[in-house]
Image (cartoon, rainbow, N blue to C red; front, side, top):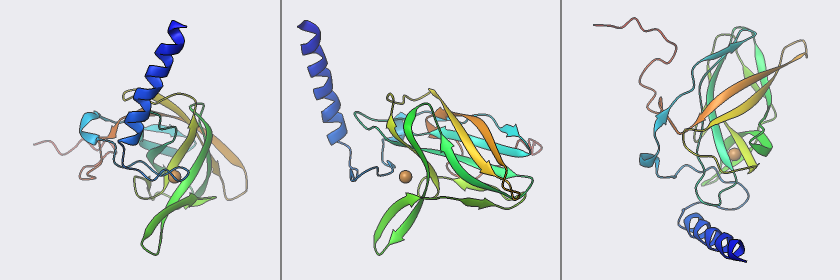
Length: 188
Ligand SMILES: [Cu+2]
């Protein structure tokens, strides 16, 4: 009986935390207001496969009972390619989403397909295209590594699965002021 009481107390705390959060809970709003100051800046290293390079992959840590979160990264492909899906063991449902203005309201919906032009980086970021992880299997804590699998389609219709490791935390390149491509040649 003791453990039951303990669990009940825990969930009450989680509920308070969830309610203090100012978010739209209709379905799966993208959580852009989770006290960023408390989260350390992180960035996963560049990951490359089949001429596709993924930079700066990160996932927003969850707060309280929140069971959905966003994933963000930058993809550059040497060849024309389309991003057609995402999967993750961290979530029961993973989708690629886009944000669209509907009158005065920002809404998000599934993006079936995002075209990548050769050599042109596609940035998935808060407020824009993002990966949506829903029905999370466990809370996501800052510093935790989250496995993602990106699904691409080549112009000939063949598909490529690319495993990517993301880090839970605040994006280190959030300001977008500096080059993340490893051109470390601006020493003075
Ligand atoms: Cu979304």
